Image 1 (tube, rainbow, N blue to C red):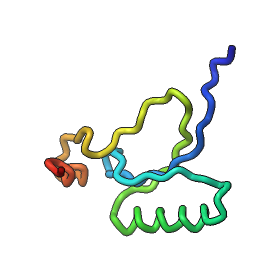
Image 2: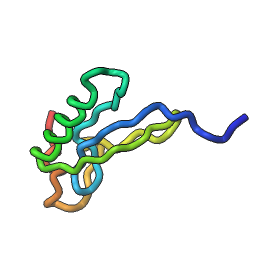
Image 3: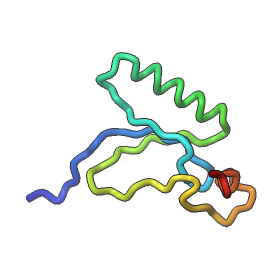
Image 4: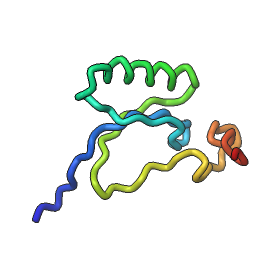
Length: 86
């Protein structure tokens, strides 16, 4: 039995400065419009003032921290904008 986790694919994220995810998408290279969709996503992330990252996801890894699930202590961080939103 192998200790290595099985890769599930790559995700692109839009994050706040403290690392909480605001936007996300799965990279789907098999789709013909994937690259155009990815570039559109990256432009939207930057236009919105968030940080774009890419992460390989593996089976059983910890779920990412989404904005709204928790907040940092920096009152100037954009994750604070999502407090009390319903």
